[in-house]
Image (cartoon, rainbow, N blue to C red; front, side, top):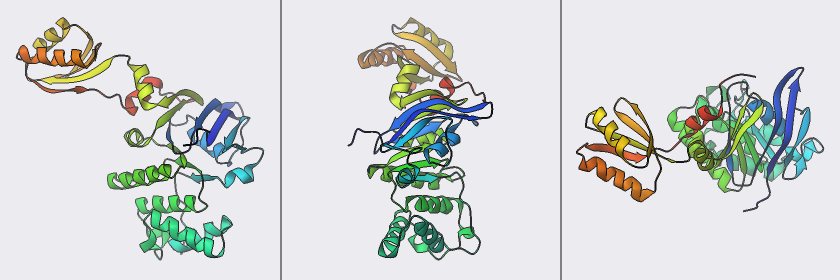
Length: 313
C-alpha cells in the first residue's frame, strides 16, 4: 500500500466575514483508508469537505489531492475527486439511465467508455435492473445508491461523502457500508461525515473530530480510546445484592474506580489478563453470581462526548 497521502489538508482556514467556520485544520488520508469526519452541527465539516472538493475557496491554507493543489490546479484535482452531497437533487421525467448518461458526458466520457462506466457503476451499486425507473420514484436508499453511482462515474481516487447514510433504514445502512468498504479495498481514500456514530465505528479506520471550526482530535479509534482511559474498563453484572458486589470490588487489588447503574458496573481496572481472571474468580468464590463480565470497549459516541463540548461556533 502506498504510504503517500491521497488527501492532505494543510492549515485550512475559512472565514465568512467575522465568523471562523474553519480554523487551521490539518489532516491526511492514505489510499485504502476510510476516515470519519465528526463534530456537532455547525462545526465546519461541510465547509471543509466543500473546500476539499473544489466547491469553495479557503481564506488560508491548501488541500492536496494525490499531490495536486486544489487551489493551484483545480481542474486536475477534480478529476481525482468524487464528492457526494448529503441530498440528491431529483430531475422531473428523468430515468436513472438518463441521469447517469448526463453526468457521464459532463465528466467527458464518450462512446464505448461512457457505456462501460455507466454499466460498471450501475452493477456495483446494484441499480442495473432499475435503469428505466424514474428518479422521483426511488426510495431513500436507492436514491443514495444513485448518488454514489454518479459520484463514481469518472473513477475518482478520493471520495468525499457528506452524510451518505442520513435517512437510511438499518438494512440500507448495512448495504451502503459494504459498498464503502469495497471502494476502500480498491485503494480509494474515503472521507465520510455522519451523525450515526455507530455506523462510523464499524466502517472507519480512523476519525477526525472537529468543533467550532477547529480540529479537536484525530487518529485511529483504538489510539483515541486509550487516551481517554489508560486502564482496562470492565463490564460486570451480578445476581447478588449491589452492596455486596461494591464491597468485594472495593477490597480487590487493581480496582481503581467503579460506576454503578441499575445493578450493572463499569470498572476501571489496573492489571493484565491474569489479574482480570483473578477478579472473576474472586467474584465467583464470594458467591456473587456474576452473569455478565467482559471488556468495555469505548465506542465513538463516548469518544465524541469526551472530546467535544457540544457548543456551536
